[in-house]
Image (cartoon, rainbow, N blue to C red; front, side, top):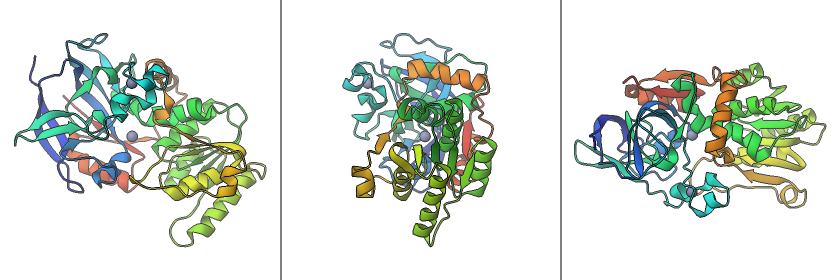
Length: 376
Ligand SMILES: [Zn+2]
Ligand SMILES: [Zn+2]
């Protein structure tokens, strides 16, 4: 058994700068593998985690998706070998829990039955035990990961691009293909054109969607959506006069979709008001996929008549309901063939030392998606 020491960006205290420090992985559990990290996207969810909105407990390493190379395999892990390039997504597939056995691995108990208490994987030089948030801990040179949460990938594409497979691509693309199951010609409205929304837009085009409307307050992101093939761009406005602005945006979505509302609405914004808007922007009997969340304990206000009497279907996504073992290589193929374009989404690359800057640029919406890259 080897000793793995490397730098990690540790969340020592909520809302304080990340501590970039040397940590040592704990001796490897037989069910886990050590992955030398190549790249981890700085997901906007980690802005919320840094602010303490989603119950993460310091000291912990954030970063819930990654890609790297297996450098040690626990004695009880089969099917993986040292040297393999693997995607580490935000969700494991244990194959044995209730959810995996009924074919719904995106709710795998190995993650969701932990109750938010993640395993300790490393020790700081001060002796502190450090956990891996979401069971990944991608903002570190080495990760200790369950053998059920690493998936080999074969591709010539660079790791900064493939690192996005485990969160943005799986959730965005999977929401279109697996959850909404967009049919050719269906109208689609996308609420929020960040890293999820822009993947959704590209997937909707691949699925043969008809009119695609994108609702997004940030001008630069509306421009990106336009360049990626959105037919109608709607600015819902922000701040004062919100309800009037949302009414105007709702009218704009309906006008673009035969006066009815969209067949499919994909929500990728987060605030409860955006989710309520998304449901109302669907037609009677339409489908709305919700992917965003803002703060633990928040609730969702929905209009009663539209929700109860008009046959709307509200669908929850969670990692795009992907089966990593079968979907990962297909989505990689879409990237390789240029059908999914990472260029408008992967805004900037950061060394680990600039983790605070990556967070600030995510929070300020300067980046659609920054990626932390490791140069071993
Ligand atoms: Zn994420
Ligand atoms: Zn499972």
